[in-house]
Length: 223
Length: 142
Image (cartoon, rainbow over all chains, first blue to last red; front, side, top):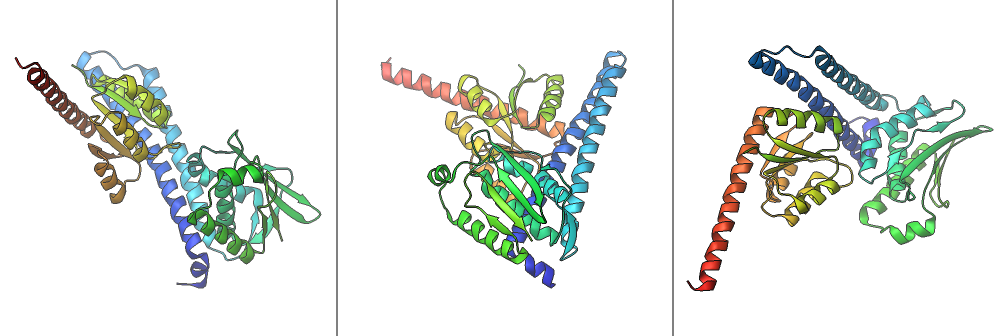
């Protein structure tokens, strides 16, 4: 094992595994819809042969359009999977922050749904790039987003905003419950304690400050 | 008589197209995109088979399976899954699923499993009716 893989640790392997499973599920769903659309075209053809009635060309065109939509969907998933897989290539790399935030949220969208939470697109006014370890940064961001999903406020929409003020880059997660409310509703089990430890470890490795003690928000400050 | 089916999946496009293909095969299909809607349906209606996606937001397929069985223990459930692991499959069968089918599913295999589900349900209904009659006869002392 090389140093890069060892550096990922258990949190990294868990993240890689859970995102890969989620991607596989999404691809399977696209394949299932493609399969059913193709199957329906076959059904309609057989019914036309049996009844002697011609096929409705508009219907066939609509069905083939749906198949093409699913191919585009699967292709977009595979492109994201490829970007995710290549995030382990370089220990340190210059990354476009808005792009990597969007990718992390896209990959985690289905998992967030398990908490009944919708991840809103990232709000970003200026292009920001930073030097960091892309995979570990995504892992850290996802661990914090996952933790935030448990304390999102009643509209169940989690928002991320990216800002840069005099060389200080901040990512703010908003739409959270107040700390008091969160303390009342959240139980600290073994998994969430471990998750908090992982956040501290990765943030410290990347030299990122994650302030989770703010009321109704979480702030990342990047070096 | 046509098979009465409840189809549960969060992918609405998948639901629409599957329902049409099943209806073309003479089945009576109701679709719902969330487990909560499904639980409400099962309280008032009986189905020959319920087809459940294993991975859904809100409540996953195994939780849905447990909740459906709680409402009606005789219900015949076929699990559909995008990423079947052996563990999940075993768990589903232990919880009382009739069968498990991987997505993309083959319509002929699914139809076959639906026929089996209907036959199983009919046997269960017949047994229950027989027991009821036996109970009535023994309690009246005719």
